[in-house]
Image 1 (tube, helix red, strand yellow):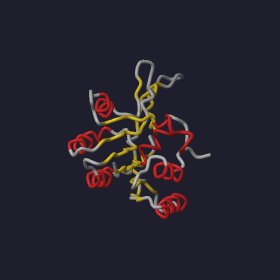
Image 2 (cartoon, one colour):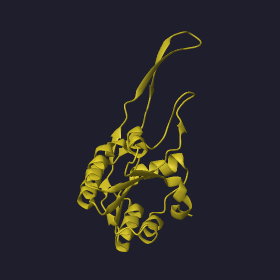
Image 3 (spheres, one colour):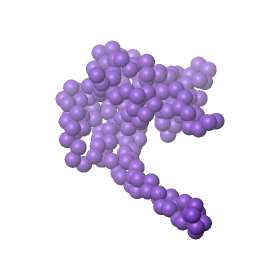
Length: 200
């Protein structure tokens, strides 16, 4: 059984930082995947900002160690500002306030990840996908028909989004794939790997 790992870096970082409160050490993760899980190839799909030398050096180091890194530059776009109408408490005059909603940094490596997964999927393969993104549902279904076994590595921990609503980084679509009877799609809680892969 040949094993390959595909790490959606932005999705994984959001999960570990915002939900689980730890920082991934990508060198430790690479070594863990190579030595403990016996992965033949480990792919990283990171976003990088122009001029970010620290992150550039990190992924250069991973390449030197033997990882396959497919970086993309972040696209930064302005979020729509909000306008709120309020009344002055002293004179009751209506006042419109503008709230700056800031910027969003986006880097989408889904196409690159998908192409690599399709290249390596087959009857004798086990694929580890580090992402909870539901956009990969069709890809996973496709490689399963090719005979591949898939393990999704993300977090199913519930995150409160209000008094009556919570969510998790593992999308409902992927959750259903892992829960189907006899499914070759498994789930691994990334928090279980925390002490093997976190930055000290």
